Structures are given as structure tokens and as C-alpha cells.
Length: 395
View 1 (cartoon, one colour):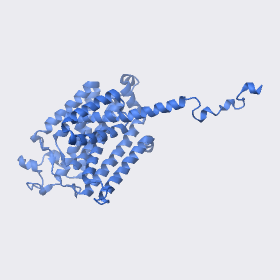
View 2 (view 1 turned 45 degrees about the horizontal axis):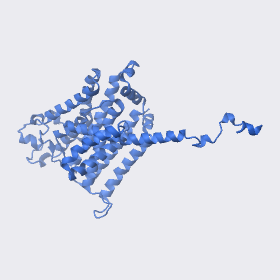
View 3 (view 1 turned 120 degrees about the vertical axis):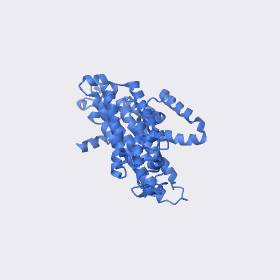
View 4 (view 1 turned 90 degrees about the vertical axis):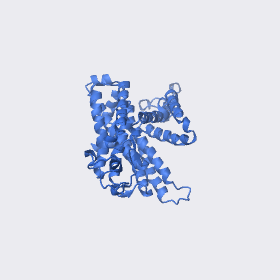
């Protein structure tokens, strides 16, 4: 059953995209570690880390596309799941500092010593173990999504109301994590990381592995998302998006269909956040900002929602543009981002990838409708094989 589930995901374009991502996961670290710095083929470490950050954003956009593009849930709070996964990873990295911190405490992180904490909070216990921290990367965002979705979907909250509630949830978490007594570093967040699994987070080799993991995890989640949307459940998911009331009248528990997709999407966002933190070296409450979640919506819309590949393309292109234009025209970037979203809505409602797919489909239809096109137009039907092509000539 698992094999058939995976095989359904292996659509041509998904296989190509996943193969490209796996090739990037191997090629870029190799060009960084094996090619001399003076060579034109050498990829600098800072470029590799920047590309790794883009891949994490692409995974976050893919997670949003699963619920928005295929279930019709416009979540303006996916940045919260991303940040929670990042905080889980950050807590593990903080526990790895040990006595090498500024205050030299072997157990308490520096910010807790500064704030006169006497003992480690209960929710920090176990975060010094990598496997437990990675479990929390999945469990915490998934639990929040489950609890939120359980009440929201069973209350039949839909449309703009659901979007507003998700944004309110994100803003509430932003305010909570800003508090010093929450035990997450307050305004400064978690930073000054040293090691991950005993390897320095600043080493080129570690950054290369993190980049490869980001690309590989994006490819894996792309295949998983494709398997979900191409399964029988995926067809019901699209049915909920297009006609929720009709799907409900057919006997499906719509709230359960939505809840599963929402939880899986939140876990994928948590993985993206966990891969993001060691590559940028910090996690703070700013990641909960509602504007961040809105940017994810823009990435998905620009690339093409409901295409899986589109959000990946959109996230990479928009963030590349952000890195470029914030250096050249920093005061104009937000206006450019808003204009990009408006232009996409007006002129590319299906996004970049969606528009390309539509154009290719229209071209195939025109070719099929053209008289004399294709081999089928020149070969007579089998039932008429004994009939002369020109009856008058036979006479």
C-alpha cells in the first residue's frame, strides 16, 4: 500500500523537480568544498547559506500550498508553525553551548542566567537530546495545528474569517514570545549557537550538510505532497476546496479532511523552520510577525498555487529579488513587493507555473484540433479499412 502511495506521486514534472533538487543538494556543496576558492566554479559559503535559506522558505511555501492550493484554506498564520519549529531547533542548539556561554553555566542558557533564573524550565528538559528536539520540531507545530483546526473546522469557520483567526493566532504568539518570563529569550530570542551534533555550525562542512539536508527535505516533502494530492484523499481535498457543501452532503467528514491536511502542512512548516535556524544563526519573536505569513502567501501566489512546484519557484524568485533590491533600493522593496502581488493577481492569476501549464495545455488542445495534425488524421479507422477512400473512383 505504501509503495502504491509513493508511485502515485511520481508524476513526470514532480520527478523532474525532485531530481533537480537532489542534484543541487550534491552539486552546490561539492562546488563549495572541493573547488578551490579562486576558481570561477567555486560557490562561496555565504552564497550557499543564502541559497539554503531560500530552500527553507520554499518548503514553507510548499506547506502553505498544500492547504491553500488544494483545500482552499488561506492561512495567514503559517509563519507561526515555521517559528515554532525554529524555536525547537534553537533550544537544542542552546543546550549544546553548555559552559562555553558568556556566564559559563553548564545548564542554564546565558539569557536565563542574566534574568536570574534558578533552574531550567520543565519544557527545556530533554532538548539537549537531538532525537527529542527533532520530535518536538514535528510535534509542537502539529499539536498547535490540531488544536486550532479541531475547533475552527468543527465550528465551520471558513473564508476570510478563518484567515483572520490564523493571523490573530500568530500575533498572539508574537506577543507571548516577546515576554522574558516565557523562557524563550524574550526580544533577543535564541542565538550564539556553537555546535550541532558535535560539529561547529560555522564550519563550511556543517553548512554544506545543512544545505544538502534543506534541498533533500524539500524534494522529499514535494514527493509526499504530490502523493497526497494524487491519492483518493487528494481528490476529496480538491472537492472540499471547490464545493465544500456538496462534499459534505456526499457523506464525507469535511472537518477531518481539512484537519489532516492542516496538521501535515504545519509539520512541514516546522521542518522548514528547524533547517532555517542553524543556517541563519538566530531565532527570535520577529519570525511570528504577521507580515512574514503574508509574504508566504505572496510567494505561493506568484509561483502558482495548486501546482506544488509553483510555490517553490515563487519563494526562490521573490526572495532572490528581495536580497537584491533591499541592497540597491532598500526603501522601495515593500512597494515593489506589494506591486508584484497586485500585478500577479491582475495579470497572472494562476501564477508563473500555473500560467505556463495553462499555455502548454492550450497548445496541445490546438494541435489536437488542427485538421490533419497527428498520425491519427492520416490513418483510416479500422472499421473502414475495406472501404475505398474514394467511392466514386471505385464505381
